[in-house]
Image (cartoon, rainbow, N blue to C red; front, side, top):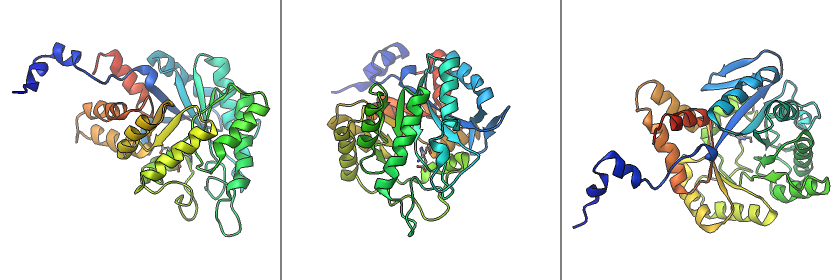
Length: 323
Ligand code: PBG
């Protein structure tokens, strides 16, 4: 008779049998930077996460160093928005300045820059619109190239295009290479679904579309094979890291991506997933351990890297010996 309980007898044997372990180097911490001065303001829709102006970004970086989470992904919230998202590729744009600051204050931190236009356009879509209000793919590519190049010039380590335009990885790769930035890596938001779980982020980044939705460029959550095509396209176009986003509702895709592709695989544990769990834990509806349970599920499914608002929390728990 199979007696699985023999190997669950006590804490020691249980920990010897543990198949999945979360480490600090799996974690990427999202940082929101805003214009202005002396701002370190908790985001209403993301309790425990803050908006930082550049003069106070050092506080977040100090916390990262303290927790030994050494990689971040930057999101910028500009004061000025327009139809072409010009602040997204401005030399003195919010993200460009943040990159330069981080590289001077904490050079050991690995800096990833989200490349997209929705935070910078006045209409809130992820690209350039035609007269009918559709995002024009190929016109948008040239703007994405400029954003990625401006990040590279500011000293970024990795760019992560989240716009879901076709051909964007190849286009950005070529732009970076011909400007001498062959060593800047690209993480594709390869299989990015049109998800309701981005709500708290859009409130935090003031990036909700002013009309319509993103279903013309982000993926239908009913689809699995389409995700495999998107992942394959990113591989073919030269991505260094693939991603599935969101995480929790798409762990089947994560498992399959891990099995089919040999590139490193990231998941994005998005704002809605964070907010749901955080608020449920804060209100005592589920035990705090549910956070580890959820994050470990992503690793167990095959994620090598996890972008999560819980990153600092998880790192501190790892220090306490949790898991
Ligand atoms: C930009 C972008 C979004 C997220 C990451 N990059 C928003 C969106 O696509 O609407 C969402 C991240 C999160 O919800 O935590 N396109």
